[in-house]
Amino acid sequence: MLAVRYSLPLAGRICLGPGSITCRQGLYLLQDSLAAECAPLPFFSRESLPPPGDDTLAGGQPSAAFPLSLLRLGLTPVPPRSSYPLAATSGDLEHLVSDLRQDDLRRDPPEDEDVAAPRSTEQPGLPVCTRICKIKTGRLDSAFEARAIRKFLEAIPDIRIILDPNMRWSRREAEDFIKSLPRERILYVEDLLPDPREAAAAARNCGVRLGLDQLLRQTDPASWDPGILGALVIKPMLTGSADQCRKLVDLALEADIIPVISSSMESPWGLGLLTAWADSLPEPIKRRLLLGTDTLSAFPEKIRKAFRAAEPRDLRSLLRAPALQGCFSPPFQLNITGEVP
Image 1 (cartoon, helix red, strand yellow):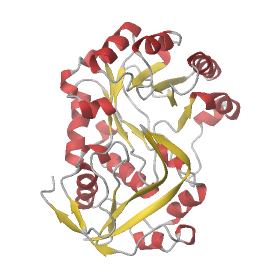
Image 2 (image 1 turned 180 degrees about the horizontal axis):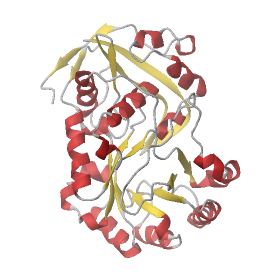
Image 3 (image 1 turned 90 degrees about the horizontal axis):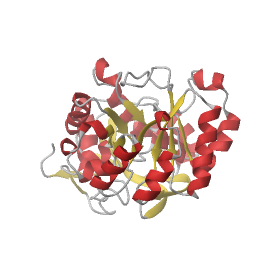
Image 4 (image 1 turned 45 degrees about the vertical axis):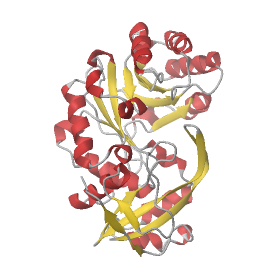
């Protein structure tokens, strides 16, 4: 199999768990006219990219199994779409409110925008007209963050929020923060605390639901009380093949939990493939899942524009883009080893 290494600059430094990155690196796997993306997520994936000069890739590792399964499905990228195109840190909310109008929230973005209009959802307790904003918390003074979120919710009365503290709080801090907000506006809290029992107890005490992201990969989702779970955040690049991801989607739906197909900061090409895979699911499933490709905004506009202009069945048209010169290696032969799920 032919492969191409990529290294794409980000719009700024992105914090990821214990570290940060300023560029995103990965492999494009080429098969006939198709190309899929292998991109282990730094600080989260157990595996890493093979170093330059190493021409082998273990097909069983999650970041390889997912793109290889997309090649088997014959998928090509489509414009990335996010169910929550509004995403911000708590410090950005005042600026976001000043830029938004109710009519802006209800309009469909022009076709040439990066993220296509969100698909309607039918989760229990989530009206199809509801707008969703994902808010990164736990980074600033908690009193400031809580005030900013309350003002945001007052300014946009038809929106619900996903809180994502990335396990930065103690249990007491988490409970005090959540109880200071209108909890009926919180769709779920993602990765509330690192300890599963503490997270479940805090959510139960606050009357909110949990979204499992990192905890989904650290625990068996079947071991949780479904009544406390609001979402399973499925990152295919960290999970495995399309079949493995589909099993988690089905598990969530059977338990009346929202399945979220979430990005791992893939390149725009990979985000387009992630959207294409979500679009390939049966219609009853598509109506009930959320799709998160909001990390597209991490890339500079010139990068996003070059990917928008690329032919989805011809990666080589992307490799020739003037704005992306120096971002790709020459194609090389890559050997896939081991069993591919």
